[in-house]
Image 1 (cartoon, one colour):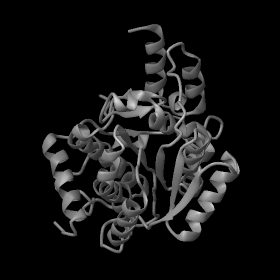
Image 2: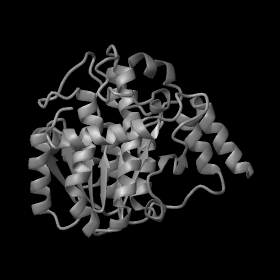
Image 3: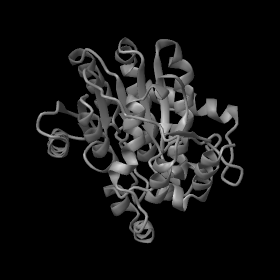
Image 4: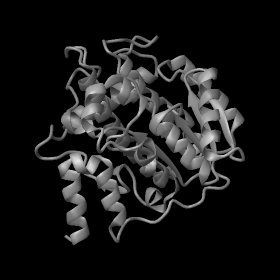
Length: 323
């Protein structure tokens, strides 16, 4: 292992330095920091959860590279606000268009994807970034635990429904934005929505982010032959609206090293433009490098049986079926 790889790995294992801005700063100074991102003129990018934080920063980054960006908000008003913020930060001459959908609703997702397929000629990059962390257990309009509906079911449906457009634009990239917190959780066997687990915002958030990583790998296997490359990534510790709202103590403790949203979004934008994303499939990225999805001292790997159970369960939910 090279010296640069040793430094990078040490940062990753340290968590504190690797997930904060010092880790990004050091990695950028290493000689093998990947080049780019390249220009994206003529390409179309869809970003969910684009109203603030990492999602907004990613939209700004893509627009700055010349991509035509669709910023998705929960309502028309939020989508318009997201588009205005993106133009304000990226420049008035960028092509940014608001699109609205409550991604926790299957009906809304179906309506949105049907319209998107009719109105768009291509989709080069899909970024699934929308996230929630309710203070108490909540359910979507379809009766699905809200964190699971937003983090797992919604990206699944968006990928499934938009695959024809992604395949038409191949090689194309799907980026599922997850969290380093996924290392602390395993998939709950026989209980995909964690109904048998006492509700904890942090636990459910991390557990559904773990599920995102697994679903990413499953989609990557299925879409490879169509030229659609599916990856997941985590942004490290970024100072977002969600962190300020849901994790105020965590933010206070990490404030000296917490990343800006743009620093958290760096790998999203780079992946959307980099050839590395279309030369590989199903990887879990952080700071422009693929990372292990499990560590020996963390929660450990999920069995293939549980992974397949998750896939079949989400598939059934997407069809409107309940267990």
